[in-house]
Image 1 (cartoon, rainbow, N blue to C red):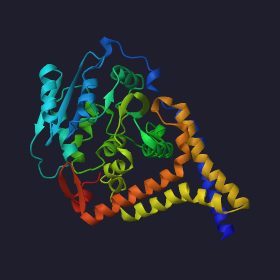
Image 2: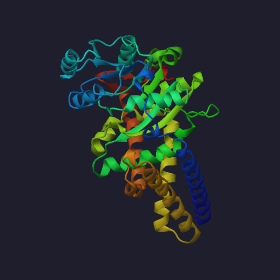
Image 3: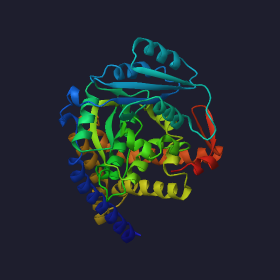
Image 4: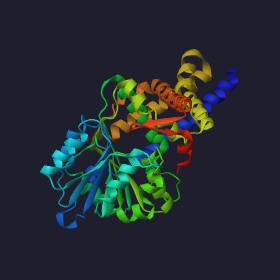
Length: 386
């Protein structure tokens, strides 16, 4: 048993060290928006910022204020009020009455065969006219120079798709612990490979995805994602499949969002997403949970309860990912990731494993998910996977 454990910890430590080297090299290649000179007025194409909101009265006003205060000469904001039960619709209408750049669409009924968010974004697209489309969420805050720099980066690299890494406003112990583990996942997913046509990597998040309109139409729009829970990631997958030029950049504080609400709120927010992220495959989830525990939790336990080579290798396997996350935090301070929370990675691994199991068990128990007030059977969701 001791020999097996020593060999296993040696493999885990070796894999962590190799990935740390890859991450250190890859992260250097990711462009940072702060280093990109902003476009001058004559070079600015017309841009449409699109989002779909449901019951966002608490966070919408602050986010919307930033969207309507951008230092950019030619843009519009198309906002969809998706069957909100609070004052979201009224807030949007009041803002639109004061600013003609804001268009508001009210949805009162969801047609069959659609999830609420993809349907809302499809409707926003239909009402837009921008040469470039930016998909975001109703609680995301943009810096005034974001568009000029993002479009400059797209022009510099001749892109059709740009995904930007923003800043998560984590507060308190649990939110920072989850964010630290998100930083580790970022290093593992290798986003710097997104623009490599020989790589299968793709990536995106709902807070900022920018596409050329022609590319979005060529991949089939959100019509292709009508029943896809992970619509943001699968939008990126469709772009990757199309062969369109893609890139990921670091926006940092130029994009800010606070999507977590402590430990319980974070678990609840991800209930619908985690199992969907593994395409509702139970075996894959089980393997993922085992991998998380083996890579993040077992080395710390072995460090405490073994000796000799096993302990030394367990120490390497425990410390290496911590160093990787701390280095990421120091290299990209604009992402507001505290290096100290790299020490919480084993705890973050336990939380991630629980989130994944919680999402899987609840989805299977209920036979589907409830999102934006509508229940979707698991059978239909599996059919809609892209």
